[in-house]
Image 1 (spheres, rainbow, N blue to C red):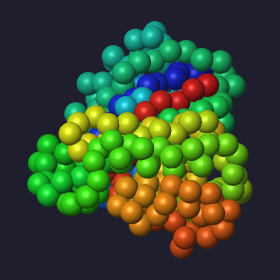
Image 2: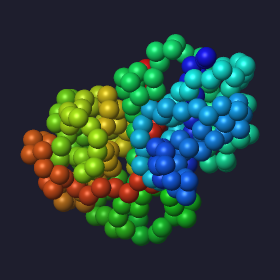
Image 3: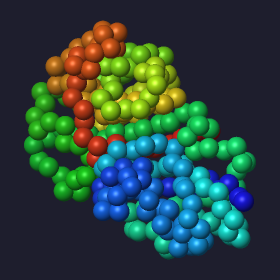
Length: 253
């Protein structure tokens, strides 16, 4: 048996997240890839993904692994698999890894990006991919970057992020370590948060983004983030940003 590591890219618009739901009427990324693997190899295998992404969330470099007896060179596995995958899910690379490699438990850092913009006009090309966070805002792009990045500094470090998690998560502890967090501009009124940590709670990145947008809109001061974290109270933080602006950007092992 070979333990194959896959690097995947997918548009999550048409899927109810990564995790198999046990309902053939609900399409998930995991189940779609497992069906493609079965067509390629004839094996019914479990494909383990690095993160339980929510419905509508996308990925640029998503890591998964599977164990197969198929006589396909590991470095060519992704090329052989792609013809069996739909256009909105593709494998970008593959390689053989040690038998102890696990897409979830071997990960040491994950980086997410969340894209959002401000403006009265809705952009058709951003639909399902970028969040229109507000139609009107009274501060400049430079001020948005200044205030949101002042707020980002309070997320860095090891904290109990209970105030930034949604009900329903399976995590045993709410403590996570954030290594970096920064808002960057990528268009006239479009921005993205890039955040790297050892792991993230259920909806944590989306709640952080909703709170940062609240900072940009003047609903929170940057220094409020510290007291929100200390409160461990979800009601103190901002809204949960919608899923379609979120991308799993990279995973480090």
